[in-house]
Length: 119
Image (cartoon, rainbow, N blue to C red; front, side, top):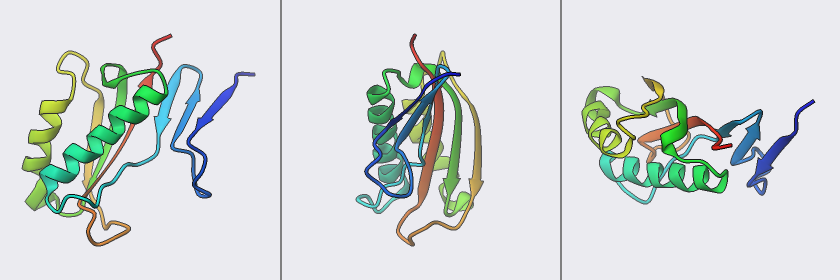
């Protein structure tokens, strides 16, 4: 039996972070403060960095990344420009990016990652 650590449990729907067996899982991150894809992607990735730090790890330990775009045809290139400037080029995760309707009309991107702990 291994322990499960849950961080950020204020939301009745989900934990922000779950750590289990040396793997960090974060909930999907979105942003509505920026109105364009580059701004939203930058803000979302700042949230990802913060959550990984709270769990004691970093983007250099990413394992997987799932990205949802509201309009992949319009926003894929610009999102990738921000992503490539953020991701650790020596420790890239596996990644999937798909188009999806979003929970709110102003959301253009959602990112969810898993990472290894540093232990």
